[in-house]
Length: 216
Image (tube, rainbow, N blue to C red; front, top):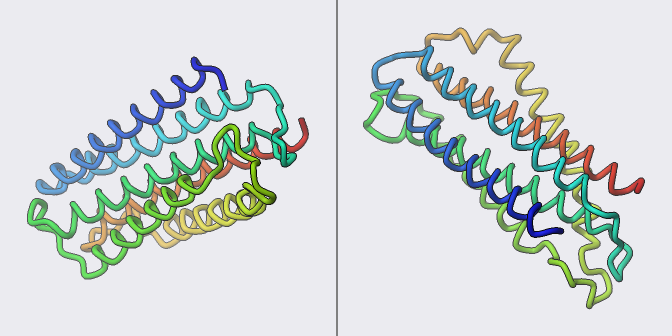
């Protein structure tokens, strides 16, 4: 991967982290004054940013030359896995920060008994994504038989599973009318919807990148 493309993807991720922090802070401050429209806008802004960054970051991987490793795996597919897992980690981390900030701190006054549970689950998923990244082989790998094999086997089914769960959750939220709810979980539903859109966008981008790498 060229230095320029590496720099581009890193800049995209760093910008997304900044947007995630601003989005979560905006939602928490707006929820304190029951400003539902601003909370919704903050969540939507993050989902939009993730979708844009997913497209831009994966476009960078699509421009990579198709090079096989000593074990026969395409370098492009591993770059895509690293990129998209990092984006998923940021999305889950945002969800955890927003959910816990909304319901576990005294900043908003919102009370919902399940807030800490969902926030903790999102934090766990973010941690699992980072753990997956840490185990991904780096350029120059292939020194041992089977290096990267289980990553290659898991990448596509994990992306499909995340896309299906996200799409199903988003559909359930829309059909149930929870996005219009005024109950205690109204802010949580904004987090769920934005996170579902974010993970769906990343998962689709990941599947496209993996398919391109496989057929090159």
